[in-house]
Image (cartoon, rainbow, N blue to C red; front, side, top):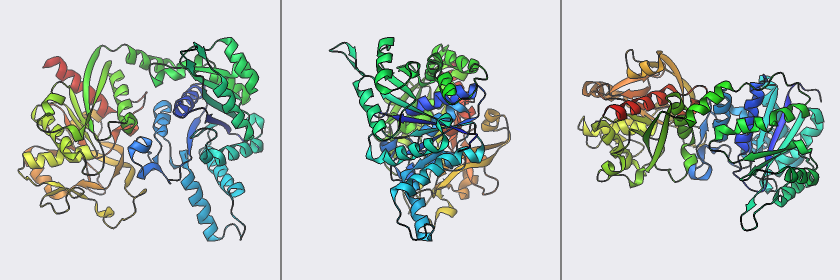
Length: 539
């Protein structure tokens, strides 16, 4: 098959959570730095159409793209590393594959044939894999296959990959298999047998990996590498070590040292145009590792037991911290355990308070307590989505005097619905993919704090919500000291609320964390960290 796009497949074995997404992102970064246009897609083996209806406890955060796709959190890594936008095409689930095939069957597209996993499901997977490369003409498409080799759910993806490799030709595709080499402390040895069995499973499915990336706690000797190469049928220089590192942002540097990009380019018959240029990346890493200041930010939410639930927020603080040459210690506070009685004990020593997004009534009172503490004690505050709505409700109750003020999401019968369901959402009953999703423009109020932070009056940010500020109350809020600093001019929806008399108090209906990258830290997070630093250094 003639193709100008090269394809790289990243699979995982032995165990989950080895970091396929970080390896894929790191390789993509190196290839991008060598002058190639690269994108990454994630194939997820679960039957949900997308992760939008999944609890964060199930799958971590739901990441939202510019075009409104609710996707796996790995797409956040892709964007943060590559500084590019992903789209609907970059995340494919088994649910979407089967939905597409069944819709075609219902339309009669298969002309009465029996619909089967092979060829119909595998053909649809191959179509989705190639679509992302052909539609936008990337030089290289990296496809990360979720799950672990040997999982029943992943078999159609492995078979589709096998077929596609055959159709593309050996010079147009590469398979990178990520496995674990565990260290047995009692024996004092690194064990390669799990890797051998994982590769054997892949071979049983008709796929020979070209490159092995071995996760390890200890450095791998040349003897171990040669042993793995011999028993797994790969070149000895194609056995790559991925040793544990302090941050995920060290991984591209380590992969460059291991020559992962050079080996991949060689196997794809692509010229190495230049040595990967990572000067700005190294400058960022140097600032992360050598901060001149340190602050503590409280992240208040109800999913704090799982760090991945707020992954994009955590990484945004890394980016903003580096921009300010400051180490940001994120202190997670479970909002269910926060109240007016212990708020000073839990938040009294922090330099900034962020109230995170979420859905539903659980933990909401703790968020109100955090907002009030930040407002009354002049502590830098950032509210995101529901966090902004909590700031509005708290202000209505304790400043405007509307003691029963609420969101109709929490209390449909409230007399003061300062947060109400969007008009466009009132007749929607289905859950998946029906919220206000993706990027929308926003006009900033002149001379507002937001305008000073963004240094422009028109911005675009990503959304994921059903409820909004009730514009009926705009005038009351403004008179009492909380203003609408950002509005969507088309719909009139309020996007940003500020308290100008406060040191730094901003609530945003959108999700700024989705747009923060290593090379472009989000201005709101950068400004928030700067304000927290100033508070610590002056008070």
